[in-house]
Image 1 (cartoon, helix red, strand yellow):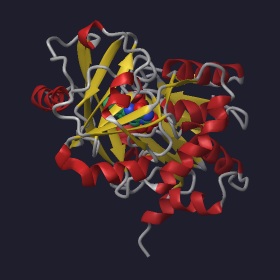
Image 2: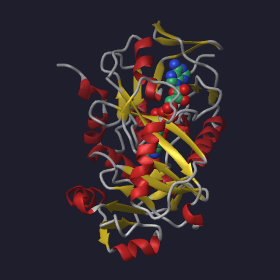
Image 3: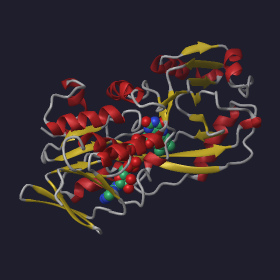
Length: 360
Ligand SMILES: Cc1cc2nc3c(=O)[nH]c(=O)nc-3n(C[C@H](O)[C@H](O)[C@H](O)COP(=O)(O)OP(=O)(O)OC[C@H]3O[C@@H](n4cnc5c(N)ncnc54)[C@H](O)[C@@H]3O)c2cc1C
C-alpha cells in the first residue's frame, strides 16, 4: 500500500515524528532490528537537562518541556550536582555558568550524597532543573498514538535500496518494497548511509561511543533521591537507576555505525575517575553497555528537507540530546512537512535546517 510518509528508523526520533505525522497522513516506520529502540534510544541516561548543549539545542530542549509536562508521569524530579577537585576550579566555573548551578559547601552536598570523598571533592554545585524521563513510557506512548491513527511500525525491515520514480520513493526491504512521496531519515548513526542509499549527499554525521556501567547501590545506600552527578567538564557521570547506580566514563570515541558495546579499558578509566571522588570502592558491575551518540559537524540537530532533494527529510544528529529534544524536534518536522510556519520560529528552524551545510 502506498503511504504518505515513510520514516526510516524506530528510535525516539523516528517514533516521535511518526506519532506527530500520523495526524497528517498514513505513516509507515521501517526498522532494521527486531524491536524499536534497540540502538541509542535503548541505551540512554534518560535525563531531561534543558541547559545541556549548544544554544539551538538548549532552545529545542526548553521548547520540549510543555509536551513532556502534558504526559502524566513522564518527568520525575532528579536534580543535578557537579563535583570538582581543587585543580579544576576554572572548569568548575565554566560548568557553574553553563548549567546555571549554585555552588554549595561540601557539607551540603554530602547531606544529599553521603559518599562524597572530602579528601578529593573541593568544589560542589547543585541545581534542581533536571528530571528523569520515563523513556520506555515515551516510546510506547508514541507507538500507541501512531497505531491509533492507522500508522504502523514494521520491524526486521532493514532498508537496502531507495529509488525515486514518478514522484514516489520506492523503499526496498526484505519484507517488500514500500512507496511514499515523502521520506524521513531518522536512522541515527546510520543516517548518512541511508542518505547515500537514496542518492542524497551525506552531511558528515559522526557516531561517537558512550559507555555505561550499572553498579550495586554504593555502600548499600538508598540512592533513589540522589541527583545526577557529573565530574566537572563532563569527565564522568553517575545517576540512580532502579535502585542501582549507573556510571558513565562520558567518553566520545569516534566509531563507524554498529551495534555498540562498552570498551573495558575506557570503562575502567571512567570508573576510576568516579571512584576518586567517592568513599565507596567499585567492587562489582551488574551490567555494562554502550550506545552511539551521533553528531552533525556543528553538534546541532539536523531537521528539514534536503537542499538538493526536498522530498527527503533529515531528522538526525540528535547527539546526546535525542530524548530531551524529541517533542519539539518532531513538532518542527511535522510543521515543515505540513507546509505550516514553524511554531519554534523561523530563526531556530533555519539554524536546524540542513541548508546550513549547503555549499554556495
Ligand atoms: C550512553 C548514552 C546516554 C544518553 N543519555 C541521554 C540523556 O540523558 N538524554 C537525552 O535526551 N539523550 C541521551 N542520549 C542520546 C539519545 O539516546 C540519542 O540522541 C537518541 O536515542 C537518538 O535517537 P535516534 O532515534 O536518532 O537513533 P536510534 O535510537 O539509534 O534509532 C535509529 C534507528 O534507525 C534504525 N536504522 C538504521 N539504519 C536503518 C535501515 N537501513 N533500515 C531500517 N532501519 C534502520 C536503527 O536500527 C535504529 O533503531 C544518550 C545516548 C547514549 C548513548
